[in-house]
Image (cartoon, rainbow, N blue to C red):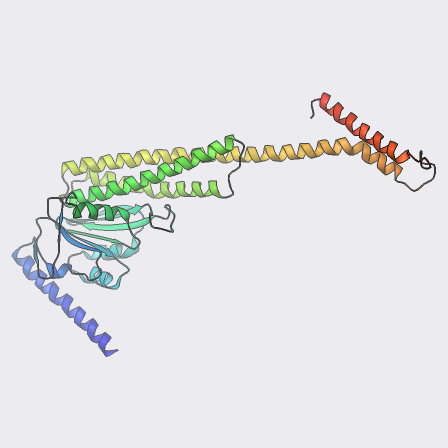
Amino acid sequence: MRNVGTGRVLQRVNVALDCIELKMLSGADVNVIAGKALQVSDAIISCQLDGKGGMIPIEDKDVIHCHQPCWLHLNYTHRESADWLMSTPLLPDAVRDALAGDSMRPRVSRLGDGTMITLRSVNLNSESRPDQLVVIRVFINEKLIVSTRQRKVFAIDEVLTDLQNGNGPVNGGTWLVEVCDALTDHTSEFIEELHDSIIELENAVVDQQVPPRGELALIRKQLIIMRRYMAPQRDVYSRIASERLPWMSDDDRRRMQDIADRLGRGLDDLDASVARTAVLADEISTVMAEAMNRRTYTMSLLAMIFLPTTFLTGLFGVNLGGIPGGNWHYGFGVFCLLLMGLVLGVAFWLRRRRWL
């Protein structure tokens, strides 16, 4: 217990020293950050953009001149990352809880010289449905990008791969544009998959095949969830494109508006798909009703065909004297032939009346 308490005290002392060092550096140059202030032991990504499409790892002893922003990508459920989010002086107090997992719906907020953005992404993790959307939260200004998540976001991995290959974003505005572009690509691909699934169901219904129970309901649920979260996300993109953020160039704003328009077209496809599933549900109900009516009609015709024979067998089955042919050796065989002839006669009559 003493060791744990001592460790926590030392951690707080280190944070305090980092704050003092940061303030001293900031007093000399507002565009300088101590590398120690950005050290998070369980950070997923910790680097600085080099302005040429690559990245520079952040070392403990670095004194970072923020001509290009530094990027920290954290899992807010990890202890060290959570402690850093709650204690670092680099973040405004208003964004600490938001980065730690309180905000869920897509939104954007201006906070002084920075911007807090919450976005949703299609879930591409294994053993998860794509409609179980994951959340990415970003605080960004001219010298710092802090992004957090719980479940893996593949759009971040794509941007990181581009940086590692030297063809990634060159500044904070380009970084945000490329992340949003990757998120929208994944969303568009999932919408196309839903569209293909609806076409398969429509083809099956045309062939009078009823889909498995729950399949159409799952597609409609996925469409509704995507519509619910992607509509405000499109508005977030449009707002970012329209506001004069100091860390975004006019070209970045134009690209962001293109992304918003592309997501808007995806929303139009979602609306059309919701309408198509409603028509498809009605058509499936019609097919099932017609199948039930056909079965009921067939059973009714069979009952009608055998109704006279049922009457005769019931009549001749009474245990009373005087039944015709009761003492005749061939009486039963002749009676069966008469019943068969009666069945064929009724079937022929139904056929002529176009009931069969």
